[in-house]
Every structure is written in structure tokens, then in C-alpha cells.
Length: 447
Ligand code: SF4
Ligand code: SF4
Image (cartoon, rainbow, N blue to C red; front, top):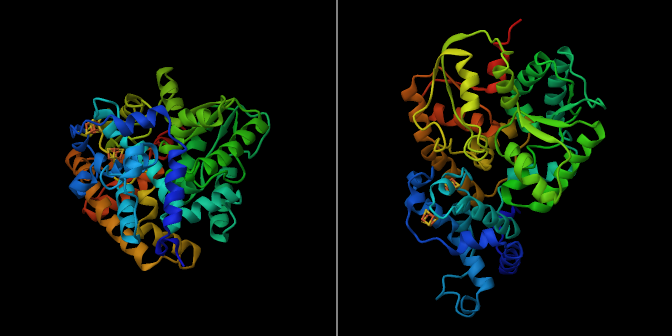
């Protein structure tokens, strides 16, 4: 039976205790200091899908958990102090519905005068839900696969990776080469959804003349996927795997082409989780391209096509790379245009934080690839169907901007953004090509 069918109050209480065990001063500030000004509501991509999906409303269950476990008055009178835990499967489902309407885009954090990041609170709420039996089946499958370390255990995944590896060998790529200065770390998700990003990155690294290698097998599904449900134990295990691999090669720099949460995680969160420096630098491919551009070493062939940039929330707003991709793309296209919301408040695609990974079209894609049905209960199916409707609403503002820009190609740098934009532009009838930055730039490298 799918865990989505089960409800156990003991699991709910254990989940609440586990979340409270992670309380720290920053999280307590987020929980305690909201004044209800609603400034964060305006920018949240999910507010158009329903007023109940505003940042404060979605974080409220986490506040209930904390109040009920920490404050004596709320422990004694949970109903009165808004600290009641779910008592039925329906109530638990409602909390899951709220938690899976957050892309962790950081727009609420950027807008809030008190720096409250509802996305962070919602990540903890997802951990509570994981403990209480509410995690989408596909996401759980991928988490288990990643923790197992045997990422290519499915024949279909192994085939996709082998075909890609053959292409890379043709470009002179060496795998697992000790002594290389740079390690490029592509994930299984990139191999499945944006293989062009991997081939493009290989071409760019070769063109830049770097001494680099990459793992012969992916080290993660999408480094580390358990972060999407706040499972820090699983995240730590995958992080150690990556750190050990890089140490074994002896590289000083890790290059990523996925500018979604893997970049932010390895650059900023992983050292804190490990409690020590990683022992290597983490860069995104756009940083290397930008550096080469500034030194006058890119000399790209220019295209006439109208191109725009969709800034992945984790690379732009949350990591500060806002103008670098624009400068690189402006040097590649005479017709580069910025989207209306370019910059710190760039709109989210609507599918981040694992949402696009679990909706029915993705489930069907995996079923086709694996040649088998992924068992999902009726209750979970209803949850996923509604989530898909809402992702299309949440993503519409971005699609409207793209349409208004008149761009023929949208370039971005996150596997989740590519997947989401492919779904949302198609659903809203906007014909546009979606490409990753390395794929786009590699086609314009001088011969
Ligand atoms: S992180 Fe983004 S999606 Fe999540 S609540 Fe904040 S604004 Fe909304
Ligand atoms: S902007 Fe900050 S203080 Fe205002 S409602 Fe949102 S989280 Fe609360």
C-alpha cells in the first residue's frame, strides 16, 4: 500500500518531535516574528493558484508544530493556541497540499522586511510530512535510489548514461582521472532531461583548456535529492560521497552545470552541513564563461535569433549571479532581451523544489523510460493531478513574460526550470525553444 493511504497519529507526533529537534535561532525567528503584513504574498508564484497558498498560510502548519511542542500554553491547549496536529488523513493531506505549493524560490524572503524565509519553514514541514507518510512516490523512489549509491541500477538509466558517455568519449573526455584540477559533476537528472547541458559543458571545458575529469557514473540523482524533503541525514550521506570522490581525484574545483538547488547546496549549504570546508571550490559553468569573456577569450559566433534568459531562483536571487549570464548571452546574440522581471525579483518558473519532478507528466515520462507502472494510490493521484493544475497557474506569469519578450529561445541553467518551462509554455500555447546555457553557448564556440 502506498504510504499516502496510511494515517498514524504516532507517526505524526514523532514527525513533530523530529522537526522541533532541529529548531535553531534562525528558524525560531522565522516562526515567531511574522507581523502578518502580507508583503510576501504579492510575489509568491503560488498565490495566483489560491489565496490559501500564500507564504504565511503555507508555513502555518510548521508554526503549529513548533508552538505545540515548545510552548507550554500551546501544549496544554493546542486548539486555543493554534497548535493542533493533523488528526485525520484528510487533515494531513491538506498540510501536504500546502507544503507542495512552494518552490523555495526565495521571493518571500527577499520581500519580507524581517527577512523571514517561508520556503525554509516549508522545507522543515516537508520533513515532518516525510516522517508522517506523505512524500510523493516518485520523489521517494529517487531518494532511495540516490542513497543506495547505485544510481544506474535501472537498465534504462544505465543505457541513457552509457550512450552519453560514448558521446563524451568522442570529445576526448576522460573519466575518474586522478590528478585532474577540475571535476565536472553532472547528475542523472541532467542526463535524462538536459543531456545537451552535459555535452555542452564538456565542449566548453575543453575549449577553455582546463584540466578536467568527471565521474564514470553519476554520484547523485540530483545532488542531493533528499534536500527537497529536508532529510538532512540522507543529504549528508550523498554529500560525503561527493566530497570523498573529489578528494580521491585530488581536484581543487568542482564545476556544476545545474544552477538549481544543487549549485546553491554545494556552494553555500554543504560546508555548514558537514561542519567543515568542503576542501574544494564550487563554481557554476556560467562563472567560467563570464571569466573567459572578461579576459577576452570567448569569441563566440553571434546568432541573430532573439534570445532571453530565465534566471533560476537558486543561481540568481539566492546565489547572486544576476548579470553574469546576461553579459555572456549578450555577447552571443545581437538580439538578446531581458525579461520584464529580470533581476532580484525575477519570477520563478513555478516548478522548483521538486514540484515539477513529481507531477503526472513527469511520472508518465519515467514510466515510459522504465517500461513499468509506478504504483500511485488514488489519494496520491488526486493530490498530483491538482498539483499539476496549480503548477500551470503558478508558471503562467513567467510564460506571459516570455511571450511578451518575443524571444525565440529561452536560455536557463537548471534542469528543473527546463522541465517546467517545457511543460508550462506548451500548456499555455507559447512556442519557444528552451535551452540550457552550456548547450546554447557550445553551439556558438569558435571552431
Ligand atoms: S519560497 Fe517562493 S514559493 Fe515558497 S512561499 Fe516563498 S515565495 Fe512562495
Ligand atoms: S512579509 Fe514577512 S512579516 Fe510580512 S507577512 Fe510575510 S513573512 Fe510575515
